[in-house]
Structures are given as C-alpha cells and as structure tokens.
Length: 66
Image (cartoon, rainbow, N blue to C red; front, top):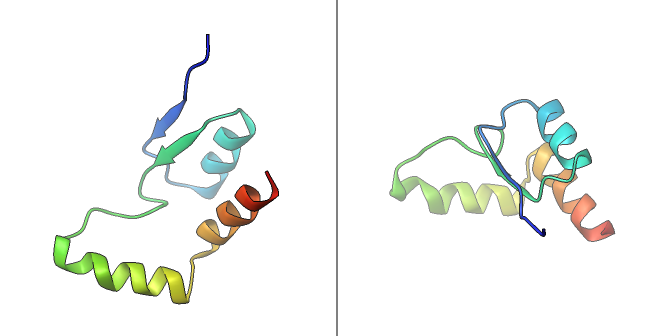
C-alpha cells in the first residue's frame, strides 16, 4: 500500500527532523507558520523569500539533495 503521510502540529525542529527521518511526506504546524490574517500573507512571503528562516532553509536543502 502506498500512502502519503502528513503530520499536523509540528512545533520543535527536532520533531520535524524525526518525522522526516521516519519518512513523513509533508507537515504543517507552528514551526512553519502561525495562523494569520489574509492581509499579512504578502509580507510574510516577501520576508521568507528575502530572508528564509532556518527551518525553511534546511527543508529546501534537503529537498534539493533528494
């Protein structure tokens, strides 16, 4: 059986790292971003592109290596 694994509620980086090692395909949680108003999204996206947070930089590097 081929299932895609999606984790919810990821908060610490260590939890993200563990889930990734265990083969989790996708995840979401406060580690990636907290709930926000629609009007705040463009500012967040601009800041991530210009200055990515550590966890996003790590995720991008891992994805590029795969």
